[in-house]
Image 1 (cartoon, rainbow, N blue to C red):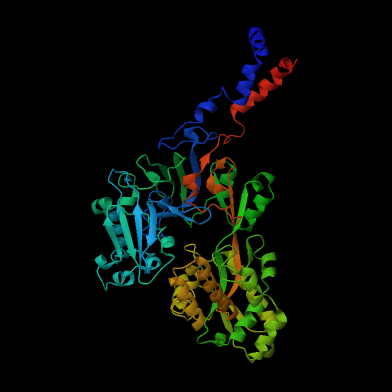
Image 2 (cartoon, one colour; image 1 turned 180 degrees about the horizontal axis):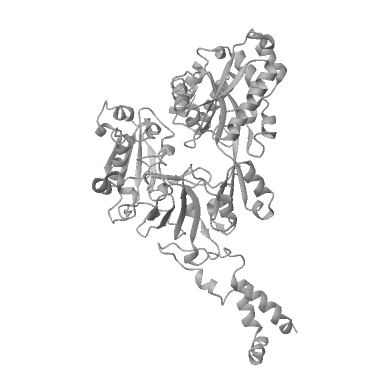
Length: 582
């Protein structure tokens, strides 16, 4: 031992190299590649630690174009979409290397990269994407998200059995050229086609819908493939060694602990026990627990989600036909008071349908149009013929029975505000979901509180929702014209944005809806997770949206705190450096 110490004492250069890491195993790891040929970053943990763990809902199928609402975890990771978006919501290549619209704006052409294959070795081509969309429109498939793709030519007629599936406006021009024709010019179509995870015809022909339900029959075209699936228990994805697309993952495995809404697990407690790496924080109690713990608080990430909570009303047949009544209700709700009470820490006030940061949003400019103003609210109600609420008919405020306790509490708070300030009779009713949706879609809802989340990152998504052929019993002719023009305008975005902004001002000023709050999403993830998606985007938002993060993240060598190498170096410095300094 003494000879070893003497040898180390007189070799400061060796110690320096060791402490700088030049002689450590980490150096050899800087050029490591993982099982799918991805070069790992220098600070990545060993390959056997490149595992991401989380909770997720279990479902029936692992095929996007079979079911969206009953899909299981990992569905979007076993398929290669035509396009993806990055953390800034910019479109980036997926299976398609490039794409363009025809001069008349009716046809979009996508040029696929060559050499991509399914995990069974079969080439991935434009024919697979044509087959996928025909399968989605086929009424025998009974796809529960078919409405999303109605801009595609003949889509509604195919779904309604008025035209054959072969009439659908999709075509494989050749092996690597896929074309989509729309009913009218649709500048937002590429955003829709992010949702293009292909269905494998060869597996469906052999196994039917069951192809996606087990590792033995599952076929993948994406960065991961299905390795194991135990219902309501566990699902494991492994990096796909056959993947030839642009998004090879760093991770070797993803492990989802599966659950159902009827048996919610202790997600935060499991996260604290270091058994999972990511958790969504649900509810004010759990959020308070995180914020009160310095360790957990350092791992907390919050962002205003692109979801809007609002009141919709029947402006065709009820007292809400009078815009003055609608304005009275809008100005009678103190949104800041809601944020300080039932929605504390989990929401921010809304002044429009488009949340801050969403394309064409102008939230601050629109705020005065529906902001809390009690004298103005009472004046509007009096001008409508109901001074101090006299003669105003009793009104029900409907809430779906599936909504959260916070939402029901917010409805009760709104009911109290309006009843006390306007002196009108307003009763909250919790309604069974099917009854609620049937009344909404047939314009028979008197007054209702409901949420809506964006489906794709374009103003057309949320503005089209308010056209008179949609779910809301409200119509404004100028709004209809502006949204119709913007939805088909193939020119510069700045001009299209101007149309949407004018339209939304009409929506807010005419009180097509009363806009109340945008939820704040709270998440925690471990500090040893790293990747390009885990930094704030250009709007300052930092969010785990799923699908992208799992492809681009990796586990750093800090997974277990300071590495053993660092601990050894610290010990060596303390023991030997004093001697070598003299």
